[in-house]
Length: 289
Image 1 (spheres, rainbow, N blue to C red):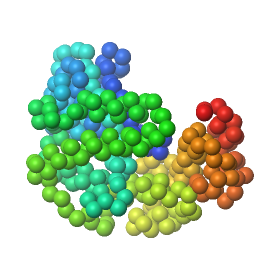
Image 2: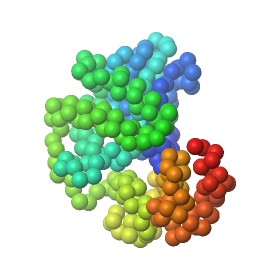
Image 3: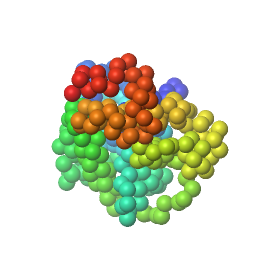
């Protein structure tokens, strides 16, 4: 069976976390792939998981890392029900600015390209890490989406990934200097981080393409293929998404918010916000606070 592509809205759901229970969800999970990273932590029962040309049987307490663009499927070993926790995320969102360490996204890329490293971590190997508590906290934070949830989610995701990276280092992961030129997909994933960090500025598509060492037309084509929308639409929706948080969790007036997210004036902000939500920013604030 040809693996299907699983789309993820990276802008609005950069962090996904949930419990999967075969008593409530469609099962088995047929072969598929996606651009985000996935971590599975088994809580009940056992599952047979195929990842590319490798096969794993996960028992309670075992953990499996599935790198981006890897074909994978999940089946039963004969024991039902099966319950496991899932984390999904774009690795670029875990990068920490001004850190002396290589970016987390690059470390994860190196791990995926090092054949001697294992994606499977049995219970005994990770017993010193409070994985059950960490996954439970991640899922609670992402589901509730309270004020500052993205900051909290980032913290807990980073804790989990750094623990796994330390295990990979013990297995022989070599920390190499990050090259200046990266593959097209890696460049496009990191450009989202740049957009997010500069959302209040004037972002020009030509300059973003140049940063990825790509022509305007090639950048536009690859961006839409990867994210299902144009870069211009992505930037606009990112501004609106930032405005949603400011409207819900602060008392800033509309003039301040429009400047904070890079609109030339308040009237343009209100116009585009209404196109997205069919209501004005003031109505949105009253509805969701």
